Length: 478
Image 1 (cartoon, rainbow, N blue to C red):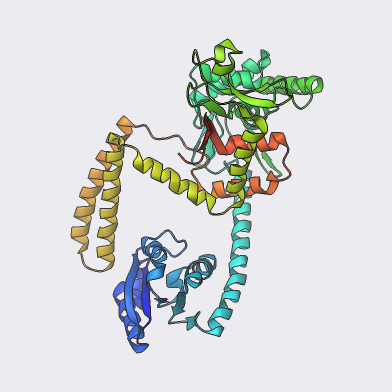
Image 2 (image 1 turned 135 degrees about the horizontal axis):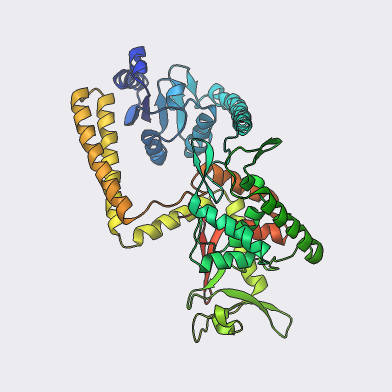
């Protein structure tokens, strides 16, 4: 006897009026199973969730338990998903590899039959069309936003600005740093020295304390006319789109000086010749690693405290940490970055490893409060499920949810008092990260040193060396 997983979804009250209530779907699906002599393995229910994406507890539970049944049954195809792309993903990547058939009783869609399997190819065509249409609509939407002078950079806001209702607004604390960057550059400081000075004076921005890729951020600020109030997207240029931080005279002086330095020193002015300088640190004393030559012609990454060549960079009287051959350490890091860019499963491996590391760490007061907030959110979800299943009156629901919301708000205030919220990051958005990784993957093999250094310093916050051990702190795993 085949075991059937029954998936049920209701997103709105209107669907209940159309005969798609949870109870109605259960009744018809159970009757269908009885007629085919199938046993019901379990019910997977998403009450009050849209079918536009897979961010639903019921469907996620179904995916996780895919090895516990033989087929998935829905009343109608759009109950599973309203996205052709997601439907195809579930069938081709989740169900069929686990020998699970998919059946929609309304459309007679059945992957256990030759006709049903042929339908997968048709779905694939429409899924591709859907992807192309989404890309086109997204691009045109960004163009229109750009024409209106609205910000179009996702969750990555330029240092010096906040984004409020689509408009860039000056962040006064960061704007001070932007002005100092221009002032110090005109005083003759290199981008690397500017980043070091900002860091030594205790300045921070929403992304870092000017460590690791600080030099690259300084360069981007010096090159961007966004700080003149200009908005750019493709061929669309809008002047005075937002308030300027830098005046035109200062901007022109800086860029004239940059061109002059380039004429004198070439494109390598102020640029390191090595991949990992600025990223590698000693686990034993906390000092940076730098590149040193030896008499055999080899180059090594060496701890400043061990080499004792630059007094201000020494962090300990004695350090015996390992010297790494430059080509060997570069290869280790390049191999890890390459794996991230080209192995689709490696990102999830890193995420799970980070989650295990966080779980193993002792709980702080903030962690306890976050757990309580999460528990209350689950209670609210359960209340909504009971309402969708018509098992709780609206009056009782409102009173209980109101009480839970008050508790949740009080806990959130406690949390913000002991742990300020983390600054927004360009990696907060999974789609933005996926696009970034795709862009880097497309250029990785043909990239020169400067391009590879940019990729590495964007993805990696810090590399800690302890003897033979190399620990990478990925920038997207906060």
